[in-house]
Amino acid sequence: GVFAHLEMLEMRAHKAAVKREEMERQEEKLARLKARVEELRLQRDELRAKVDLQEKGQLGKEGVVSDPAQPSAQAVLEWKIKSLKAMLQIFYLTGISSKLTKRGVCFSISTAYEGTYLDSYHLDLLTQPEVRILRHSVPIFIPLEQIAKKYLQTDIRRFMSVLSDHLNAYVGRRYQADQLQEHFSAQIEGALQRNSLCNLLVFNYNVSSQSKTFLFNARLLYGDPCSILPTEVVISCTPDAPAALAETAGVHSDLFRRVALHKAFRSVCSAEESVA
Amino acid sequence: MDVAVGEYIRRTVLKIPRDEIRTVLQKWGFLSEAQLQSVNFHQVKENTAREVVQLCEENSADIKQAAVLDIIYNHIYAEKRMWSVYQMNRTGEATEIFYLTDFKKKIKRRLRSALKNVTVTFREYEHNAIWIRIAWGTPYTKPNQYKTSYVVYHSQTPYVFISASVYKSNLPLLCQALVVASNYHDIREMELRSHSLNSLKDIVFKRYSQNFQTYCPRPLQDRNVEPESADLRIIQENRSEKERIQRVNREVFGDGPQPKIEFAQYKLETMFRSDPKMDVLDKKEPFRCLIKFSSPHLLEALKSLAPAGMADAPLSPLLTCIPQKARNYFRIREKKGLLPGSFVSP
Image 1 (cartoon, chains in turn yellow, red):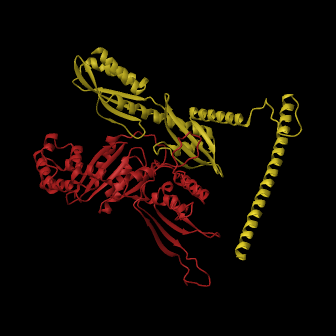
Image 2 (cartoon, one colour):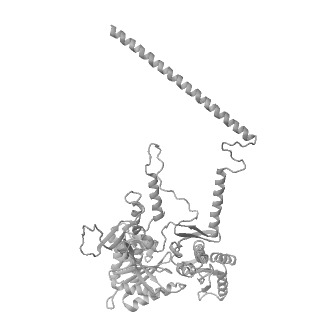
Image 3 (tube, one colour):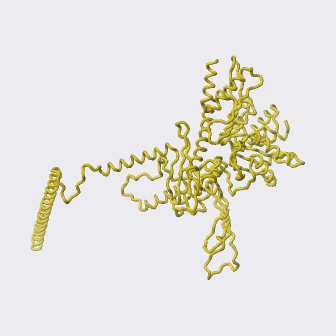
C-alpha cells in the first residue's frame, strides 16, 4: 500500500545519502593525501638541496652537519671500551688493583706463579677517620693484622706490597706442593705432610741405586714467609743405605734449596732414569 | 680382644647406615679386603655388626683402633653433632713453624698429666685439618668411650672447632691443652654454633663468597632473570623494583651459596617502648625477650625473603651481619646516650 511505498522511498533516499557521504569522505581523504604528497616533495627537495650544498663544500647554517674528519659517536664509544679493557688487563697483570667505594677503597690482589694465575684476594678499606680494614678475604693464616699494624696507617703502598708478597709466596708454595702431589705421586711414598701456610713440607720418596730402591726422607722448611724457596732442607736416608747415597742426598738437598720443588723433583726423577 | 672394645665397635657400626658400612670400614683399613669380602652387608645390620666384631676379634683390635673407627664415623657424619668455635689469641709475632708431632705430643702430655685416664686419638685430613678425639675418664675410672669430645684444628689458624661431650667440666682443661700446644696465650668461646662444621669453617676462614667491588674481570654469572615471556601481552609492572631487590640482595649476600647455620638467637635487654599515656610497665626496667630464628638453612632463607616479597630489602643488618661478624648469638642492649635506639654488644 502507501506505507510500503513510502518505506521503499525512505530506504532509497537513505542509501543515496550514505553513498554521497561515502564519496565525500573519499574525496576528503584524497585531498589530504595529495597535500601530504606535496609536503613530502617539499621536504625532499630541501634535503636534496642541503646534500648538494654539502657536497659542494659549503656548510649551511641550519641543519645538523657532522664534520667528516670527526669520528662518529659509535667509534668514540668503541675506542673508550677498548682502552678500558686494556686498563683492566694491566691491572690484572700487575696483580694489585683498586676501586673507590662509598666509604673508602677496595683493593684486589691477584696472585700468580710463573705465568699461572691463581687466587684473588680482596680488602675493603675505610678511609675516614683513619684507614681501617672493614672486611677482607685474606686467608686466616696470613699475618694480616701484623702487616696492617706496621704499615697500614703510614704507608698504604708498602702495606699492599708486603701483603701481596706474602700472598704470592703462599700461593707459589702451595702450587709447588700441589704439583708435586699431582705429577709425582708414583715416586712419593705415603702422604705429603704439609701445613696451612705450606711452609713446612715433609715427604718420603724412592731413590734407586744399583737396582735397589731406598727411601729418602725430605724435610723442607720455608723460614721466609715471602719466599717460594726453602731456607732449610734436610734429606736423610735409611741406615741401611750405601754410603754413596749420602752424596746423592747432599746433591738433592742442594737442588731443593735452589730450585722450585716440582722442577727440582722432575730433574731428580730424570736423573734416576738416566742412571737406571 | 677386650669385650668392651668389641661392644664399642659393634655399637659404632650400628650407627652407620647399612649401605655405607662397607665404605666406612674400607676407610678404616683395619680389616683386610679379603675379610671385608667375607661379610654379608645386605643382611640385617645387627648381624653385619656381629660379623664385623668377629673379624676384629681375629685381628685383635684394641681401643686405639676402635677410636680411629669412631673418628672416621664422626668425620663423615659431622653434622650429627653441634660444633662451637673457639678463638685463640696471642701477642707478638707469629712466625713459628707448626710442627705436627710436637703439637700432638704436647696435647697428649697436657691431658694425661691432669687426668691419668684419657684416650687421645689423632687423625689428619685434607686441608691441614687435625681431628682429635678425647674419651674422658677420671683419676679413678677408665675412660668412658661413649663420652667423647672432638676437636678440629687447622694448623697456623687461631680457630678451634669443638664438639663437647656431656662432661662440660673438662672443657677448661681441653682449652688449656690446645692453647699450650699451638703456641697461643689464651682462648675464648665465640658466639657461633652450628651443626654444619664446614659452614663454620667457611665463616671464620672467610671462604664464603663476599661481594667485593672490584675491577677484576669476573665472568658474568647467569642472573636469575625470568626469561622474556614469549607473550608480549604480559607486562611486568614492578620490574624496576624487582631488579632493585635483586641488586640489593646480591650486594648483601654475595653470589655464592651461604654458609649453613640452623639458628640465630637475639637476646633483648632493651626498654619497652610504648605510648607514654599507656604506661604498660610501671617499673622502668629492661624488657627481657629472646628471639630465635631457626631454619634448616637460615641464611639461604633470609636471602630469599626479599625476592619472595616477604620482607623489605635491604634486610636488617642484625640479620645480614651473621657471616661477617662470625656470630649467631647476639645480645642487644640499650644504647647509652641521648640518641634512641639499641646497639649490638660484643
